[in-house]
Image (cartoon, rainbow, N blue to C red; front, side, top):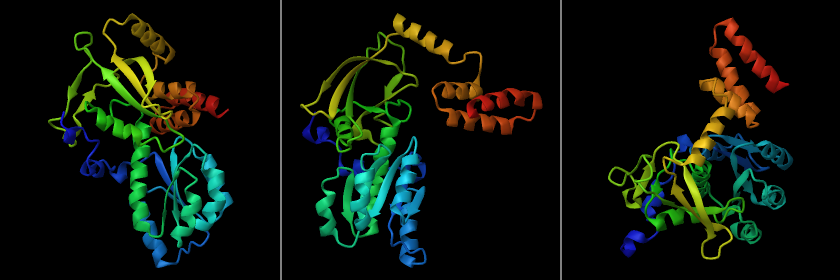
Length: 311
């Protein structure tokens, strides 16, 4: 492998890795500033630019109300833009909340606020203009989305180039809420019929030499070790399971039995979510089913499930 081939990720690749902002769903943006003037043209321009990055924008002028809102966030990550004066007061209260992914200080005196901002790892920078904030916000939003994907083999392929994968893993090391993990996968085609293929020839990121796995691929963990002595960076060795893995078959059957095998489709998904304690999501699904059902007799069991969850 040549040095140019193994060098992390080119600037062009990093640029193209930025998400299509319209697809960002796991990120919301909060702007906190006591001096916001909604009648100011600069305010309207700022709102427009921010919503081009993250459409779900929440604006606050009161610090206490903003903190209360952040504490109610579930299953999503928040990026916060905050004025310098309020930042010194609010950051200590929200920095360690798991909902908070990144913080951007928007002020008129960069040098003054850079001093105290250096002590808080989630602060990604101190800015005096909105354009560089938007650029930094794009990167933060991208990282949030990648973290939300977790180990999904559906939404992302895996690279055969170690340095590429390691570069992406290291992007999480600055976030105290995350642990960076490099997965090293071993596949023996003789032991498994699980479908996988190199997509280097058709991928937009051909230099990353990615491999795409089929849905529901299952791997066994062989070992876990630290990389270069870092407490925040680990290597996990995985091996693709074989077709005759008896333990996997027994586990699959047990999961099937415990996941309402006599129910189908969205009804089954709602029940599984409720069993996992995700009652709000289960209610949303059953509310949709209720709206789509025209037969009154079929509505009765839906009402019954909703009553159990609401109660």
